[in-house]
Image 1 (spheres, rainbow, N blue to C red):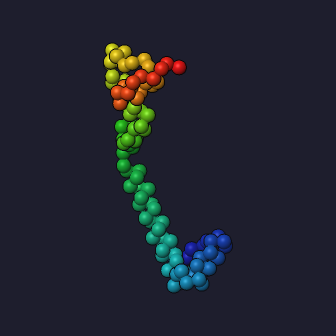
Image 2 (image 1 turned 90 degrees about the horizontal axis):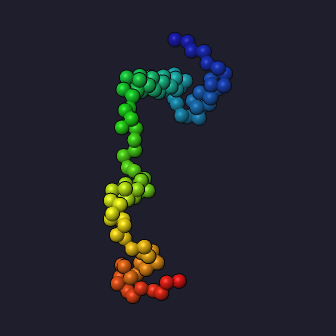
Image 3 (image 1 turned 45 degrees about the vertical axis):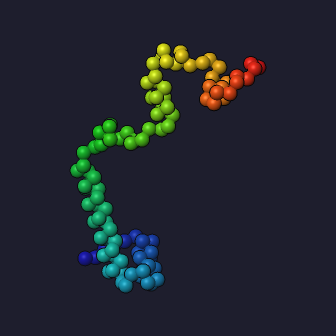
Length: 104
């Protein structure tokens, strides 16, 4: 079999042989042909596989802000209404039982 390659590719292969990466040009071309066949087989196998369904395309884990939003949305409105309106200012009082600080 005779293979005609562009001069730049041929010189690159010759350089790889001369540097010791391959025993001969035939060895280099055999390796190249093997890699080409592997790639073609991979492409053929991927073409045979069915396209991923939308459910499979979704990441397995949600970002933390979406998890937090889901939790917030699962709490009924009447439960949110029971929370103190000064919870952020007086968090030490509600968490640790310390006396409330004077309102600023």
